[in-house]
Every structure is written in structure tokens, then in C-alpha cells.
Image 1 (tube, protein in one colour):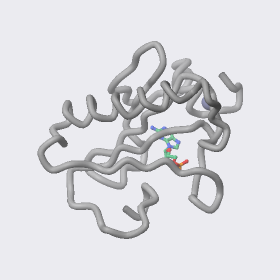
Image 2 (cartoon, helix red, strand yellow):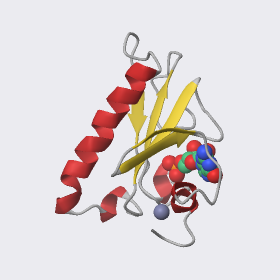
Image 3 (cartoon, protein in one colour):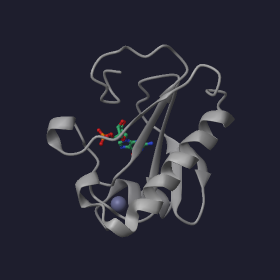
Amino acid sequence: MADDCVFCKIMKREINADIVYEDDAVVAFKDINPAAPVHILILPRKHIPTLLDMEKDDEALMGHLHSVANEIARAFELDKKGYRTVINCGSDAGQIVFHLHLHLLGGRPLLQTIANGRGA
Ligand code: 5GP
Ligand code: ZN
């Protein structure tokens, strides 16, 4: 947990969010500014700032994030037409919240541009 982190605050219920999934290791909630009909952020409870900060011990956690993405995708009926996942890492990628998170985007055809979770 980081005191100044908006996503840690959401996990501590200090800031409201529309939480759609949670377990011991992962929390998922709807993006406040959705870029697609379904736009969900999936994050580890552990405060890892960026993908560059992940450690060898976090490999299983990163796999779990993707399993959860599949579970949520099915719950939101994205399993027929598919979806996109995006992890922005650092300033050139446009990362604005420095608590590692996976964007899950779907519900419409997504442009085949360089995906960044916003201009998608
Ligand atoms: P990034 O560019 O860091 O990968 O994306 C951060 C995402 O978090 C953005 O899509 C933004 O809309 C979302 N976001 C930022 N602050 C909040 C918040 O307080 N609540 C929710 N639900 N989403 C947020
Ligand atoms: Zn955090």
C-alpha cells in the first residue's frame, strides 16, 4: 500500500469505485473515463508502480491478473468477440497512475492502432 496512490485508496475504500471483482491478490473496477463499452482496470493488491518494477516473485501474480481478465471478460460476455488488454509502462506509454494495472477493453471493434488504452 502506498499512501499517495489513488488505486491503493480505492482498495482501502477511501475512494469510491465500481468494483467488479476482488480476491486476496487482485482487485478490478470500472475505469472512470471508459474508452470502450467495457473498460475495466485489473490490478494487484501489491503496490507495484510499473511493469519495470515487477520482480521474479511476481510472475505468478501477473499470470493471475490474466486469468482474472478472462473471468471478467466472460462475465461481461466478451468471450465471443474478444477483447484487448493493455499495460502502460512509464511516461512514453502514457501511464498516469503508477500502480501497475491491466486495462481490459471490449464491447466494440477496437482500432488496429498502437494500443494505449485511451486512443484504442
Ligand atoms: P494509465 O494511463 O495509467 O494506464 O491509466 C490509468 C487509468 O485509470 C485511466 O484510464 C483513468 O481513466 C483511470 N483512473 C484514474 N483515476 C481513477 C479513479 O479515481 N477511479 C477510476 N475508476 N479510474 C481512474
Ligand atoms: Zn498503489
